[in-house]
Image 1: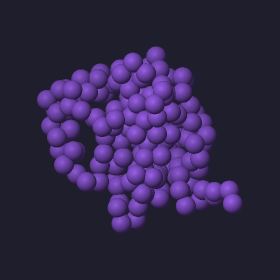
Image 2: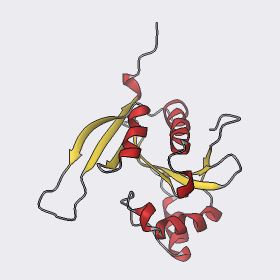
Image 3: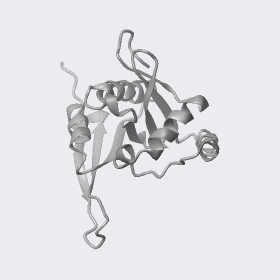
Length: 174
């Protein structure tokens, strides 16, 4: 899935990667951008991982840096093979890699894989409106804002953008 010489490698997530995931799940600074509530202990995380890997509508990937260090994860969830679409989630858990382009490189790889290998047509994601760094990255890759989820009655609610990347809208030069 990764180009040779790239600073980022996207590969299937392995059970031994869960120890890193738990560190990120416990970090409030990382978790403020994620609306998942993933397990924070190894036994629970292993149970979650085994269960999720059974579903054909879910795929989990690790993001590695140029030295093979796991720095984040990517998820394809709610894969609908009939409609040819999936929800995308990405997280760079290692904060020293934030704002250095690793997320963009990983997303480029997964988008290529999703549209050309899996032959899906649509990727969508949800992102907090305050996460300007992620929104900038998604727009750069061609995602478009489609809707905003608001809940004015809940003071703890964080506004969320729904963003979409539709492969059928891409035009190839004649």
